[in-house]
Length: 132
Image (cartoon, rainbow, N blue to C red):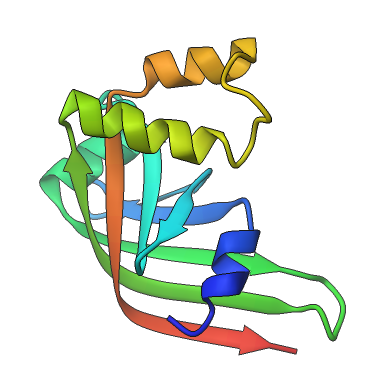
């Protein structure tokens, strides 16, 4: 993706999933972007994880700026799946958390790591970007 540097520099991705009644559910999440995919740590009891389990269609947006020339964004649609293998989940979750904490020894980081029992893997299909 041509916006790889931007996506790796940002901290919040807005993730939209579809609930069982067909309504959108959108949440801001921490993420890691690598090899053309987004990874989000979560818990299987969250609405976003339950929605993805039933319907893999998602949309997302990462954006910044309120004044030109710093208005930049990337949005798209794609598919998501849940990674549930414990070893893989903990490995990816640690990499995500280290984008936001200087150390995993931080109490909040440890609590988040303990609560993370799945990773949402997002594969973008259609992507749009803007820069003003």
